[in-house]
Length: 258
Length: 250
Ligand SMILES: Nc1ncnc2c1ncn2[C@@H]1O[C@H](COP(=O)(O)OP(=O)(O)O)[C@@H](O)[C@H]1O
Ligand SMILES: [Mg+2]
Image 1 (spheres, each protein chain N blue to C red):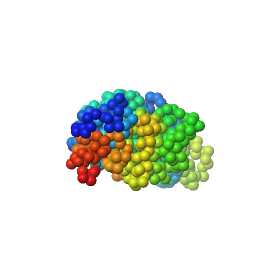
Image 2 (cartoon, helix red, strand yellow):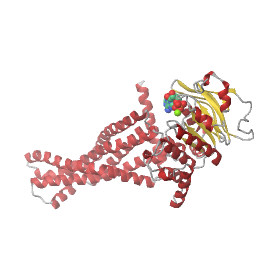
Image 3 (cartoon, rainbow over the protein chains, first blue to last red):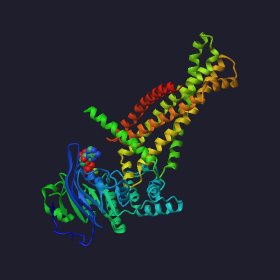
Image 4 (spheres, rainbow over the protein chains, first blue to last red):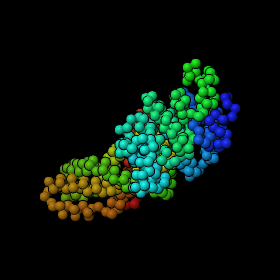
């Protein structure tokens, strides 16, 4: 891997600890190699953008990190857990500390927004008290600016609203790490901008470390402290957005207009 | 290649069933949601079950009457009908109706949750989707089918009474007496067991096909389709096996 910066001083003080460490990750489906040697570190309180074309295995990468998919080879450490060898119980323990925002938002469409947000509270934290639930749900909706949507159903919401609710639903468990799968895909520029701001706000307010998977260059520019490019199944270039832009690497020419 | 694929399917259904029993009998239990699902099942199927079993009672009685009459055995009509209804017709009609109605429903519902990543979302938030979605549905359909069958038997026998009453003017009391003397506890009990097996098969098969669907919207349609066809097939297979088994017992 070409590391464009010699140390992680790029917005990441070296005193911060690693929360994710991925080494030599390999994943294939049948005979199709999707990830072939991915190395990636994530530090406390940083936003790391993983830039790659569609179909390059970005979603597969973050799904391996939470055990939705099983890596073929390599080592994945998340918050000190070795993901590939976790018992079911430990896996749940880890998942409670990792928020996952899905590309299509994945709101539960048989439930209202309120019920969507209450679902993890009831099932994970065992909170059934009406007042307490209402308070947590309202606070969480306020943070994403959507109190008015509380009694709506997912199919009544716009794409941007769904994204926000999806993010609110994962934040409600106060995760230490956030994984965003294409947070701005399918959104107009104005809405994308708002989501980008929300991602920054989440980092500052919740002190989360985040991985933002995207093929949207302006999203990567806006939200990232650091960028890794995923090219042909490998993590190839790493640095700040400006460094990558200036690197003039032929692999990145679809993203930047050289 | 197809044999290999079939073996893989069998293995994964087997694993699915094992997972079902492991999850069902370990806490936390899903009492509240099971109750919701029972309610939903009743709601979805009650009208169809009423309608079809009532008609089946009428039709079966009307069709049997001439052949019994030709032996001069018309007075056996209530006992013939009641045995047919309780042993076979009631469970079969209820099973098939539920396979169609509930099977397609569970297959499509879980299938669309799967392809829109809602199941993955539950999985990564640690909310145990298998327990919430699969266990509740399978347990509910296993519990509800016997109840629906009892109800269907009653409705079919009412339909039958209307016909019996139109052939001869024997009263309701007499009819009920004849019905209750001709069906045994074993008949009722074994038909409950059969119904529970139908319910279990419908639940497991439909949840399996929905929970494991892929390929976007096409996959959802396929999941619903497989759920119905496979459930119906298994209902006949279970019916046959139970019949053989009961012949040994009787
Ligand atoms: N569950 C799966 N089974 C088979 N192939 C898959 C699966 N998930 C992803 N793939 C394949 O892996 C490749 C990368 O997918 P993905 O990670 O979704 O790309 P993206 O970078 O657009 O998120 C695609 O070619 C896709 O077909
Ligand atoms: Mg993707």
